[in-house]
Amino acid sequence: MKKYILAAITIIFFGGCQQALDELNKSLVQVQQNINSNFSQNTVNFNIKKVSDEELSQRFENYKTIRTKFFKKFLVKIDSTEEDFTIRFNNKEKLVNERNEIYKFLISEIDYFYDYAIKYENFKYIDREFSKTNYNNNIKYGITPSGSFGDSDLDSKYFGYYMNNGRILGYEIDTIDKYENYLAFAKSTQKENAIFQKRLQDNKIVKEKQIQQENKERAKVKSACEGWLKKAKIDVYSLGVGDYVVNMAREEAGGTYLIRAIEKNTFLLYAYIYGQFYGQKSDYIPESALKTAPSIYCYK
Image (cartoon, rainbow, N blue to C red):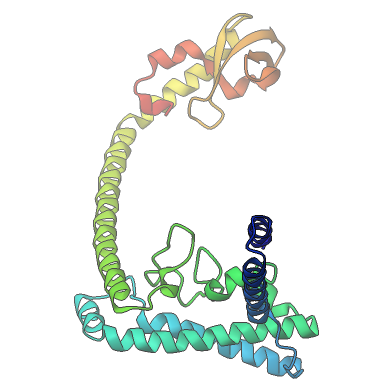
């Protein structure tokens, strides 16, 4: 607006007085029309009638039910078959048209809840589902919370296709081209997931075989390890200040510590990280005992 005033003054100054004034008036009228238009679009509908909490709650539950159907109508399940993809692709035009109609209804319902909240200061449903502080940005994308569908019947069951801005492509599928892109994305992602799951399963099998082999090795040296550990726990009582011990409280090697003082049943131990502390002699073995263990499975 300032630039129009400045332009008009400049023209007037250089001689085009009446013409400049006419242009200025036209500019001011246009600016005012734009302001009025924007204000009208954001104006709350105060003609909404007050209803009981039960009626409002029922309307909201109905909205959520239709919202769930809205996504199920055209989104693809993660476990969809090749036939499912084919059916959706062949019916893409019908699905997109139906999607757009349901979407309009959902937007009108969001408008209703927002307007009702403003007029009657009842933000129970607005706070839960939409942002009353950022309404203009949320009106188109407030159908679900960002990051998930917000519905246990949908989450982790359908391809949502999250955009870079956190929105779900479900809101954006309003043309056949976009729906084709979505189907292609879902199909590609499904294949990638299948490869990933197979890799996980293969790794699990390898890990299970390793554990089985390890258990066999442990069984072979169990008796020898028990004898070794019993002797090591006796030998620890013959250690002196300056020797090192290893914690074996859980029958596997823990930290290594320096003996700084010795009492009847305890050591005053030191480690750089922990500083000084007391430990029961029965929980430790000499550090040197690790070298004489029959197998690493005796202390691992």
